[in-house]
Image (cartoon, rainbow, N blue to C red):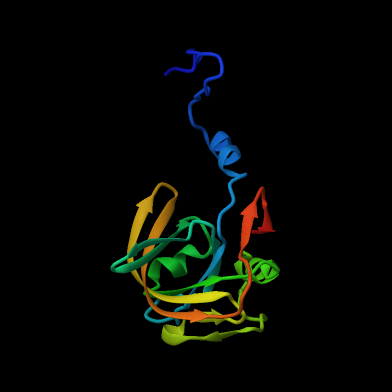
Length: 179
């Protein structure tokens, strides 16, 4: 179908995809928010230190039960990408509605997310674990798949932690909503 062709009355008009149109179409869709944390890296042999990273991933999903696999994606231009690109292990935190401030504070760019933030502790493999999440999945990174300006990270859950009860928040139209 070309942009000049008009569908029959009542049919959906299809238009070429551009970034703004795609964003406008997907923006109203609600999705689960997960906070992903990665360990940092000490400076050595001329390589700079990397602080631990944290970012929200609305693309978090279960991929397979046998073997257990989950996935999330991250923009390769993100300030968290250097740590995520090298991390062997990550933690995926699922938060309850009402905990949006925790996710926002830890996912803020351009700052050391953990330096002045209480309520977390280093977990296995140096992965930061954030207190109070509905659930935490400690994962080993299995694959990183380039996907346009993002990378899809596929990971194997190694350990699960259940926290408190509650409904997860979902991003909807640029804000967090309760589901």
